Length: 213
Image (cartoon, rainbow, N blue to C red):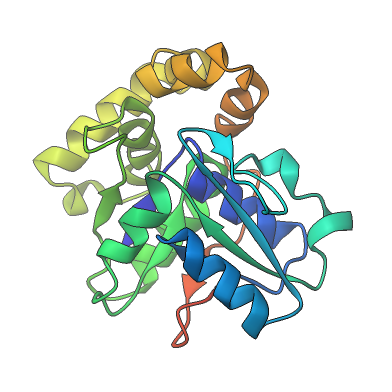
């Protein structure tokens, strides 16, 4: 299964790994993050609540918080309002990957190679369906064979197809994107609309950390 939180957790975690981090661990609890930093001294803490970086953490939930100069050869623990919570909710799934527009084709390829992995979980925003996540799901479906597309997959694809030539504008229509822009995070929104800039997929390992494959 692929978990998607386009704005911004899965986009950010994919970026963290592409920038050279050893591994990334999405968690739901802030206190757990501090405990993990004590357990793994080479660990950075990142996260937010209501889009605001957490006190005592090394970064927030922006992909721009994690350049190679910061994350190279480090582990990163991330906790966010929506995305990392969604990853925790699928803890019992045998295989979990992290997807977004930034690695859509790589995720779709992984799904097609892995047996029975044609499932996408959209994190949403505060329990509600999020346009940007459905849009990214449609980008994955774009690379699926038509015979593998359910009705819900077709709906996601239709949304992606509508905006495929202007993904920034498509994402900007999402309510969460409007919130981020109002908070001065427009650059994050625009970056999240970058299609297929990464060719690897964050895959959960047996110890629950994700590495890029």
